Length: 613
Image (cartoon, rainbow, N blue to C red; front, side, top):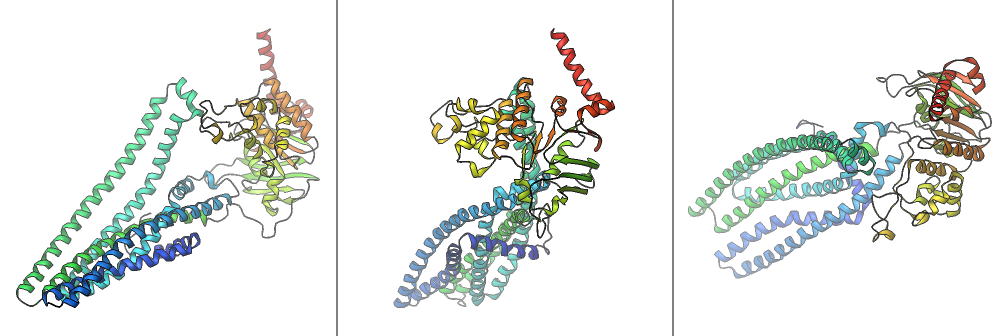
């Protein structure tokens, strides 16, 4: 994030174009109004300084016409100055609202273009995305205001320095030279502020994380049962202390720098005032010259300070805007075929051919040369110990990642050659970590196929298939009941008992209803579908899935081997490889890894039954 004083101009000039382009697309007429108002504010200080000289000279020379005309001009300029200032403030706020809305749309459209999961698992992108979410629109608006202020400030400062130079070239030169250290100091502070924001990112995200654990309903049970509330509070405090320490260092640096600049400016201004007063006493300057000098020097000094501040703030805003730009201009995380092939009905099957995968060159291999055939219309169960790559294989089937080596073929066509949206549209899934949306029951199911969100009969049909229709119908507002206690709907605004919390098994059935709403797709993936279910519910779910998805290619991941037993093919993953594959009977006859796992689980059930008996 740091930049040397000689290297900041070029990269920041490259950011000016995107910032102005964003503001133009958000509101071209508004940008034009902001520019016109900025120009008016730029010329008014110079006009006032010269009108002041004319008034004083008119009064001193007893020229009533000059004095009256200049006075009228001063009144009009003062009126315009006051109106322009408030108008500029209003336009800047309006620009902020419009830019924020437009930038938000652009940002989330860009995020939705991330086809895979790699970007979401990158801490750096998470930091950038957080900055972009929090500051994108306002940063762009402030940068636009800053760019206009810089243009106006250059015009104002140049004209005022010329005005001072008419009277005292030496003083004008001093004012011009004094702007250099002020600008350099402001740039230094701006660079450090931008670097500070980047350094604060991980600390603030951790603070939010620990604070969220203290306040979230998801963690409330363990926090209270294990008595870890004070520990989490101490972690929040630790992060906040580090944040405050970094802010304190920056604040002290700014205090010392700006105080020194203030003293330097006061000494220079005081010397100039003494000189012009003595010149007037000696008769080498008129009273009007004194008035012009005082007005012009004060305005020039204010303009120099404002210009330096605008340059520094704009520099900082452009640096911050880089986070937004880095997200919206990011290259695709998955390659897309130039001419993607259509996804046809799965007729033969899906083949994993020598598939290797790891998340990066610095990570260990998760899959090592996996070869697996998933026949069309058949069910394949993936079993194995935790960490053997089962869920990773599911991510590859959904093309959230591409294999590092090898291929996944859909009826002989590499997934990378297929239309990605069509591929995802051909798959239905219930993931192990299925989402619990803080929405209504209708929306929780409808998100499985948003085209059917308003079709209550279809949603109820999916819920009926998953065994949730009766439970949802019995809720206070049926399918329009919020499944959360985090907030209220408009209909429940006055209801203190708003919202319903489902059990883990009910949430699992709701996730299954989302999958059922999608209808019979070509591939069904069930990643631990029995999570949160008792044995009776598990058997019920298995029966429902078989009834709906009979004849559809199905991949089931389960630690409960009673579920795997019913599959047409059982594949055992061990250390990232397919160690065994076959029917349940075949694998039991081999007395290998699967047989050992199955017998171990069966023995556990038998011992439990014996104790109960």
